[in-house]
Image (tube, rainbow, N blue to C red; front, side, top):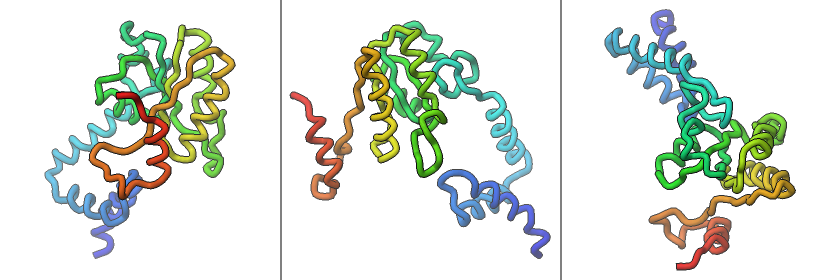
Amino acid sequence: MAEQLEPISRMQQQLAKLPGIGSKTALRLAYHIASQPENQVRELAAALWQGRKAISYCSICGNFTVSDPCPICSNPERHNGILCVVKDPRDVAAMERMHEYHGGYHVLNGIISPMDGIGPDDIRIRELLDRIEKEQIKEVILATNPDIEGEATANYIAHLLKPMGVLVTRIAHGLPVGGDLEYTDEVTLARAISGRREM
C-alpha cells in the first residue's frame, strides 16, 4: 500500500515547500490533484512550468516581467521623478491594485535581516543609488513592511539617501479601515496618531 501512495507522498513534499502550505494542506492538495483528470493536471503543470520560464526580472526596477524593461518602466507617463521602494514584486502588485500611485518602482527583492544573514549588499540598494544618480528622481517613497526588518531597511536607505538631496518619505501606518481602537496595539495607535492629517 505504501508503494502505491509514494507518488502522493512526493507531491505532498513538493507542495509543502510552497509558502503558507502546511503538511496537511499539502496532502489534501496532493489527493485532489490525484483525483483530477490527467489533462487538467497536465495543464496545471504546463502553466506552472511555462509561467516560470517566461518570467524574469526587469533590468531597471527589479519587478517580475515577461518583457525587459517591464511595462511600468517602459511607460513614459510613469517617469515623474517619484520612485516607490518595495520589498518584492507582490508589493508592486498591491500598490498597482489601488490605482492611486503613478510613479515608478524599485524592488529590493529582499530586506535587511541580520538574523537570516541578509545584509545591505544582498538586496538591490546599490541599484537604487545608481538610479537616483542617473534618473531625475525627486522623491523616494519607502514602502517596506512596518515590521522590525522593514523599518530597519527603510531607516538604512533613508540614511543613505539624505545626503543625495532627494526627498525621502515613508508610507503612513495606522488603523485599518473597519478596525476597532479597543483591539489595536499601542504601536499601531502611535503610528496612527503621528501619521494623522488635516481634514
